[in-house]
Length: 134
Image (tube, rainbow, N blue to C red):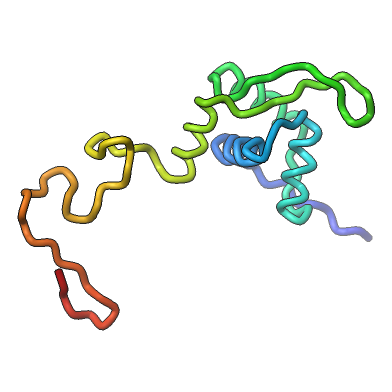
């Protein structure tokens, strides 16, 4: 008897991240996105069309994706999606976390330099040996 695939619900943010990461490689139509996700997860993750297309439409409405009609490899009409600049920002934020308001240009704030830190106050870190250093 063949083993059945276990259905595991995927959080909305996880699916969005998978789509954003897939489209970071370039434009794809919906079926191409499904195949890419299956390939990069060694067929361990299967996204249902009933989850993918609503996610694509939602992300398009948010301005994260741009879409245009084209022909697929089979000469069929297909809607191709690509990341917009807002989608690229959303991907960066999901990968790196949201930019810190206290940090110029969204760069990470060095340890000891965040809100509440006094300029010139000592910063100590523990090295691998457990001794405190500066």
